[in-house]
Length: 96
Image (cartoon, rainbow, N blue to C red; front, top):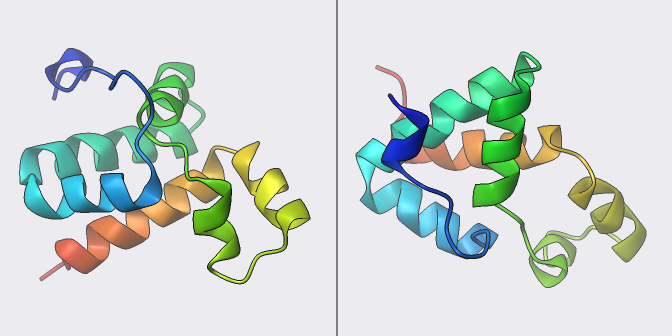
């Protein structure tokens, strides 16, 4: 799927926004899932795409029981973002 099919939003989606988008738009869900997979393999372009599409808010992360220090550390990493996105993807589209 081409990277430009879903251009980056004006500002990255919050967790709530991206979960809604994943669960209501299978095309977008597959696109972001592919980008997450590539980002985990170290693909710099995919890492940039994941960061451009998703930035969870501090309050969203602390609502999970993370301390502000833990949430701040999480926001600096791509991989924890990808864990959250993969979770939403697999809940919405479980493998057969």
